[in-house]
Length: 155
Image (cartoon, rainbow, N blue to C red; front, side):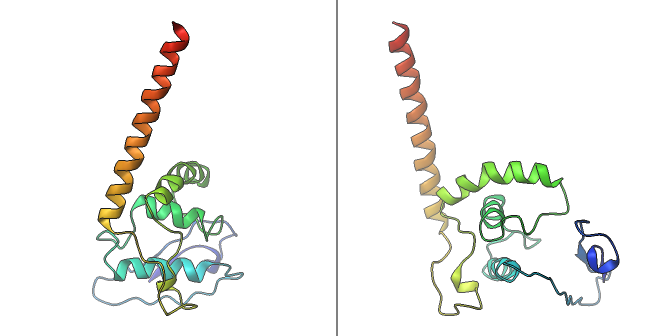
C-alpha cells in the first residue's frame, strides 16, 4: 500500500492518494483526519453510492453527483489531487447547480451512520432524465422568448 500527503511527511495542502501496489493482496487504510469536519459523511456517501451501483467501474460517482457532494456538505474540505484546485472550484461551481436541479443531493441520510433509518433516496434514472428534459426545455423556451423580445425591440 502506498500513500502520499500529510502522513508521509509532506507539508499540509500537498495532494495525496492511496492505492494498492498489489493485485493479489487486499489493502486496508487506517487514517486519522483532524479536524474531520464532514469527511465521514463524504466517505459514507461515496461508499453507499458504490454499494448501490451508482458509480462507474472505478467506484466513482458521475460528475454531477461529485459536484453536488464536493460543493455541499464537504465544501472546501476535500479536493481531488488534480486538476488544480482553482480549476476544480470553477468546474464544480458550474456543475453543482445543474446536479441539484436534476435531483442529486450532497449526501443521503440512508448512508449516514447518524441516521441508519433511511431517508431521502437517490433520484431514479427516470427522474434525472425527466428533470433534464424539463431543464433543457425551459432553457430552450427562455432562449426563444429572449430572441423574440430582442426582435420586437429592434422593430
